[in-house]
Length: 260
Image (cartoon, helix red, strand yellow):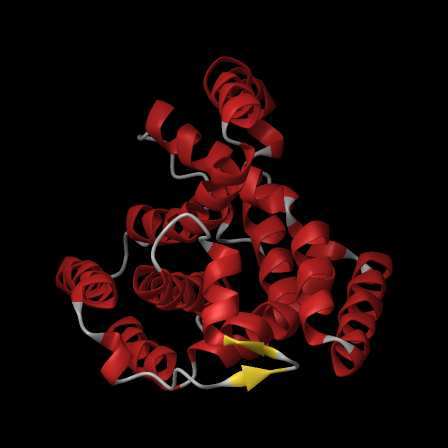
């Protein structure tokens, strides 16, 4: 029930404070979620033990698309990658959480899809606080910077959709996947140092604190800095998704779920 209740709560939250979540959650939750991403996709011997498949997938499918799109529509490529990498986490969780009852996963998926559609078709301008301003940037400015090639009304809706997908993305990497493998949150945290080692944990903590301090001075620049630092993990998730497509019988994450 936790995924279902969480998705509903996050949707309401996105309608109440879309701009705040858009700018602040990457600063606060971005680095922890990237750590989780690396932990379960790389360190726990999934991609590392399948480097051959990852390389082939990237070379013959991902790389040509990236090159072609970057040459002709670089802005839209980056927008598409940022937008739809949030969906990848949903697919990974649905595929690999095999112990979760199917009825819960089906309800979660239908609810997530339904609320996503609501974000685009509903008259959100009557619900969300359009006049919100954070550090001299309002909702319309932020929406235009995210999707500059659509109408202002549609850009607002797409920003809300992006925030909703982003929040669900963080939910999966920070709560659902760790709890699925470790059952209890303290156990997941305790084994984190074992997976990363103290040096990497110290570096991650310093980066997290420094980004937070920077956000007090300029939250939008801090958000942009995080996106630049964490951009690599977007490609990591897409490669992993293609690995699932190539070898669906392999449950890469669950193969290592017994590690402390």
